Length: 547
Image (cartoon, rainbow, N blue to C red; front, side, top):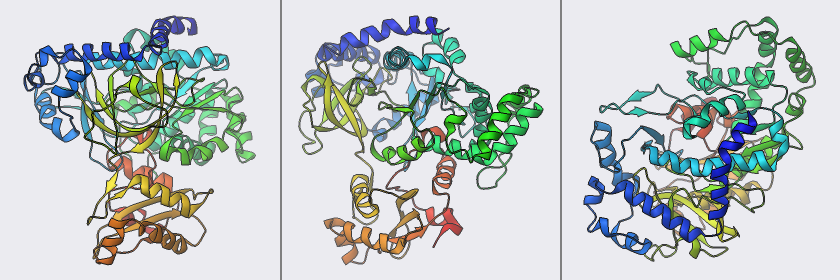
């Protein structure tokens, strides 16, 4: 099975490696492919002489920069059933995308866009299997979380949401990957994250030779192990008796409801007994589960985000898996994939064969954006993305920094969101600024949970949510002083338009944060912890956790 998988991945991996030596040529090929995908559409008709564009400079001169708002009308037309709006190809489905503080956006997915994802995902998988032989010794776990909502169709009949993550891989490869993954994608049919985690753990505990765990945010892995401690005894009983009893309530104690597909899946797994693994689990629980490696001694690699705000959660996840190598994931958004992790690279390298990427200088937004081969080490840029899915010069909102090269192709570290700014009364508080302030105020040993968020009132103000035994009011005062060093924030405070930062002590912060994000429409596996959340209502949500 592994040999067949490697054989399927190798051609794409070799082409990717070759392209790293000639990024200018690779990106030029991407641009021409995207122009062909858009030619003859309503979008192309709005661009004068679109059919004459041949070079990157001509493309930049002719096509305006776009944003989620500027393409919303076209997306609505596609949803109603109109054809040839953004691309010549039909839209296969919409995927929902959105930051933790914003409304979900519908991203049209075409066959061309899927192929562009596969030009990056295939080399990524090949790299892991080739460079880390121990990973080949057993199955892998790739994070699965509930869709968070029922799949539905638009008025024009287009599906919204994919069934599982393997849908992004080439169709011939999907059956092979399903045999490599220890938890089937059908677990994503769960009505809520709590039963999903339980059944996920049921599969994982039975897999004694697990070799790889791949999640997006490290906090997802920490919460998964927390659920193992919470439900461990029940899991052991299920394994002994041949039963499967997922929780019927979420983390807040609310009923999770029933879904016919999920019920059928759970019923189909009844009768599976694994007494030896139940005994191993009980022994680990008796010891307090100091290390999850007692369950999976062959675990060789943890793959997760390690940059920006996600970096704060890495240490907590790694404490559960001492001695296991960590590989930082590349930058992958619903709209497109930007970087691919390579073991020899300082940080992930540009996915040079996937999409056409431009790099804006955030200090000189009116300057012509640079291309991949024009970047210099140490430079910080905002990303513009063009894809065969029909997004042209799309402002993705991500900030990256160049931290070296593989051959001639830049390696890019994700710094955070360029557009994460909270502005209640003109204070213009950016996530980057808040992150710097919290790092200084909290020191090297950050609390288990720390987040700043606005709260509407008279006047409105920010609340600092902390899970710690330390004096939270002192920390909030230090944060307030640091924020007042910024002109706009200080001016809003002096005018009385904004109240001071107040502390809110919380318990089970990460778990309850995740629960609300799910309520707001996010999938558990996509949720990122943030230093600044732009949505209000967190005081009420945390409720009894206030100080």
